[in-house]
Amino acid sequence: MRALKQLVRFGWEQALSCLFPVVIFASLALTQILPLPVLPRYDWLLIICLLMQWWMVRSGLETKDELKVITLFHLIGLTLEIFKVHMGSWSYPEEGYFKIFGVPLYSGFMYASVASYLCQAWRRLKVELIKWPPLFMVVPLAAAIYLNFFTHHYWVDIRWWLSGLVILVFWKSWVTYEVGGTRYRMPLTVSFILIGFFIWIAENIATYFGAWKYPNQVDAWSLVHLGKVSSWLLLVIVSFLIVATLKQVKGKNQLE
Image (cartoon, rainbow, N blue to C red):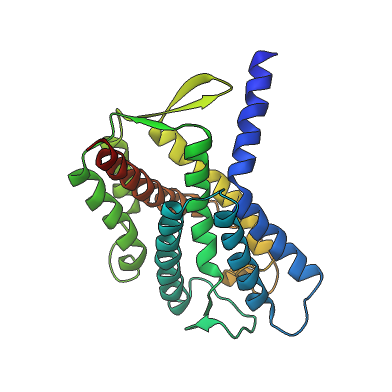
């Protein structure tokens, strides 16, 4: 019974940490079922995301430092979206006033919501890192993973080599977290895989409600290819590395 209670507690904390993504999914579903007047759907989604972000900070669910991290992810995600749409990887076929090079501005919040989840879960579960690799290894790895999303269109796709490097670099790294006063630990690479898999599930939900469309979904929705898990896995790693590095740097500054 204790194990079951702990699992329920863990699930509840995870659900609370996913508040921003849940609002995005609910908005996607609502605006598809009940079209809102005056503005195109993409613009309403942007307004909802902005209001949600404002409320998260105003209510204290997110700190100003976390807002800075989330804004950074919004810019990183929006840059990637503009490039991928230009390359034909996916599209945003609906109309919208607030679009840049065919990409609606709300799309950046889908990346920002991942950062929001990481920041929320980090605080709620009192996450700590064990044997975190030095910055000179983490920063180039994160940069290489992000750049590969762009360069593989012109050069060799090295995602599997990068995945192997992730395993080597974080082989001895663990993440510890607290549930109901008890601390648990998990290999860091396992946490990457789990988060990436659940984001793939979320991607299927998002495309079903028309957040964006892959080429094979233009005529009718179909399941997102399982191979996309590797892409989300690498993107989660970039997200985690940035959040973890910033928290490590801030922690050292506070100690000093």
